[in-house]
Image (cartoon, rainbow, N blue to C red):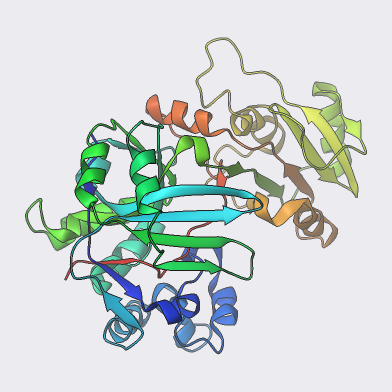
Length: 402
C-alpha cells in the first residue's frame, strides 16, 4: 500500500508567489532559463538552474553550480519572501488549461515505495541525469521540485479533495502560458494518509530521474527509515484526469537519402501524401519529408507481442527505426531527437525546413491506460513515449530535510 507523508512546506509568501514559481528544470536548457530569469531575482530558476548565476558557458555539472544552487536556496529560505509551515500538511494542487482541469494531492511519498515497486516506473533512467539531480538534492538538503505520479481512481480521495477546495486557496495564479495553478492546504492530512494506505500502487507519470535521484540521495544521506530525507514530494493525480500529449521524433540524417527512404517505406506500407500533420487515431503516424506530410499506418505487432511492442512508439521502432534507419536504441542514438507535443507540428516542420533534420515523425499520443499496463507488467517503454501537459510549476512547495 502507498505511503503518503505530510510535510512542512517551504513556500513563497502569497504576494510573491507569481514571481517565485517557474517552469521545471527539465523543459528548458540553460540559455532558456537565463532568458526567463532575466530581471527576476526571485525566480526559482536560480535554485533549480543555478548555472544562470555564473558566467555564460559554465558547465551545468561544475562543482560551483551545485554550490550556487544550495546558496540560492538558503538565501530564499531566510528571506522575507518565503515562509515555512509550522506543521506537516498535505496540499491539493489543481491545474487548469484549455478548458480542462486536473486536481491532485501534493504530499511526500516514500523512497522505500520507489525501491520496492509500490511506485511503478515505465522508463529507464540515465546515470548522468541521476547523478546531476542526486547531487542537487544532497547539497541543497532539499527536494526542490515535485514529481508527477498517478493512481487508479478510488472512492475516498475525491471527497477529501472536495472538502479541502471549499477553503480559500493559498495560491491561485494564471501564468503567461494560460495555465492556472491553484493550491490549497488541508486541515486534515491524516485522512489523506489513511486513504492512500488503501491504494496498492502509484505510477510515475513525469519525473523518473527525480524519483531515482531521491532514492539515491536517501541512501547517501543515511539515517533511519523515518528520516525526512527518505521522503520526496509528489503531486498525485487520478488517472481519469491525466492528459498525455504526443512525443514526436525527428531524424537528423536519412541513410541513403530521402528518396531511398521513401521508396523503402512504400515497399512496406501505403503512404498518403498531403496528409494531416496530426494522426487521427492510434496506429497512425504522419511523416514530414521534403516539404510534404505523408500519412502511414504502422504494421500491427505480431501474435504474443508485449504491451510495449503494441505501443505506437514500439511499432515505430520495429517497423521503421530499426530496419530502415539502424536505430536500435533511441535512448542513446545521436541520429534521433524528440520534440514534445506541446510545441505542435509547426515545430516539426521547422526542424526539417531549417535543415537541422531530414525527417519528422508526428505521433498519436500514448494512452494513460497503456502506461499503466506497461508498468503493471514490470516493463519499460521506449524513451520519450509520453509528454504530460500541463506541467507542474517549481517553487510553490519545497521539501526540506535538514
